[in-house]
Amino acid sequence: MGLLDRFKQALVAGDAEAAAGLAGEVAARDTYSAGRILAALSSAMEEVGAKYETGEYFIPEMLRSAAAVEAALQVLDPYLFERRPDHAGVVVMGTVRGDVHNIGKNIIVSALRAAGYRVYDLGVNVSAAKFVAKVKEVNADLLLLSAFTTSTKQALMDVISALGEAGLRGRVKVVSGGAAHSPELAREVGVDAFAGDVKSTLAACRELMGGA
Image 1 (tube, rainbow, N blue to C red):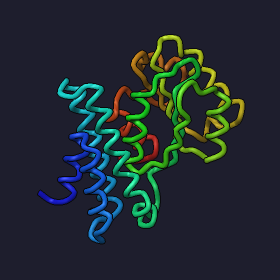
Image 2: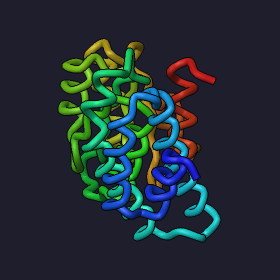
Image 3: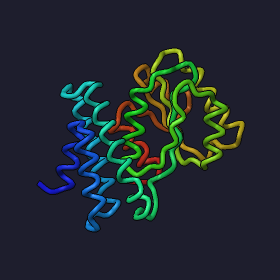
Image 4: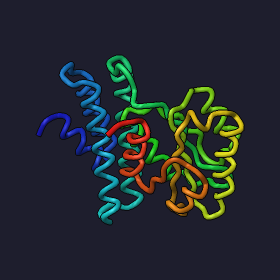
């Protein structure tokens, strides 16, 4: 088994110590491009998402894998920064006002960073004004809104409205998702895409950024 395969295996297994150690080995070699490393990270998170969908993994396993990705990225970030000619896109993400759930958001943030996106995580209970300010500040390509409770519809609508008032709605693509969310609610709110898990989030972001 090759080094990148062992690295990916550690990520899927949620072994943060092994993932960080293998990341160091990867960074020490000049044979792996940033693209290949990011592909391994992204593939690992997609596999974790698939295991969750089939019931093989549950939230604890997903959290361990997300932590392993974060540990690996701490080691790899300087290496990737030097060798990555461009990034997949700039993302602002947060859980909307009135909602303090962060488990799903944190997993998605890890997956996006693993896929090469520059992610600004605003945390939980984020106001529409704060989302808009950050989108403007970093010139975001994508805005990802997490909504895990049934009472967040108005908060989602407030963000879309605030983007429009700031003249930013046509510039940034908006993706929403969460446990109490649905494609129907997403359409009603007026976002560009709905994503219910890691795999669909990565796919939606790629599509909205003009990828395959």
